[in-house]
Image 1 (cartoon, rainbow, N blue to C red):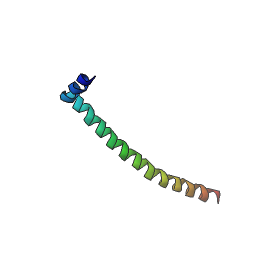
Image 2: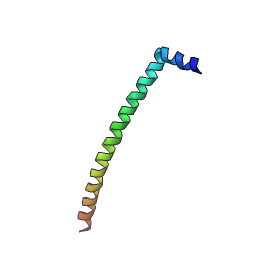
Image 3: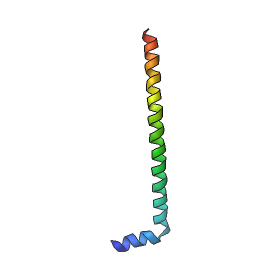
Image 4: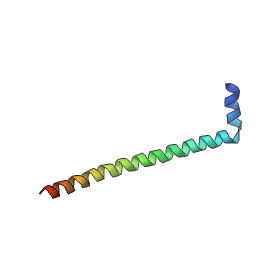
Length: 55
């Protein structure tokens, strides 16, 4: 098991996987933050539209 971890550490493909994992984590943080920000604003807009239609 330790040999396999050392082999991944030395190999270029192991580094590629780590870089992709970091990029994926950054993208997920950005997407989740954007959805939370837009989601709250969208909820307010839909509520305003619904209240103006019912009046």
